[in-house]
Length: 134
Picture 1 (tube, rainbow, N blue to C red):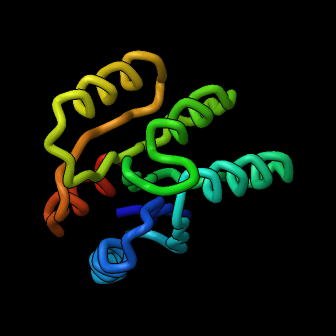
Picture 2 (picture 1 turned 90 degrees about the vertical axis):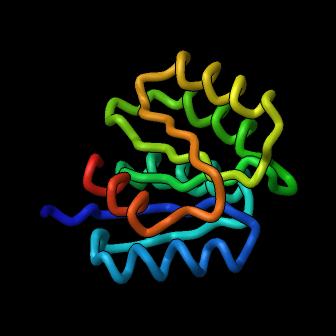
């Protein structure tokens, strides 16, 4: 299997970030794993990376409930960026609010990127499937 160049985790929960990084490292699927504590930090970095003609992450794990800029606000800005590659965005949430699933469907229909919806905690097998598909 070909390794992904870069995976990003956007989540304000250090335990979740630690767990995902640990599973990704054990699976040895990426050359680099970056993490951000909110959507603003991530979107600003991605825009800077693109300005320098570098590559943004091929896979993103995205929490929806974060301070400063939540996952939905991140998605709104992210899908407005003209990126030709199909980025695999995996929404990770502990939310049981039906509105969150509706938001997911809404954003999924507005972009060519692949947006999936998973409940926390994410399991190693799910991470393996996500990274294989990418």
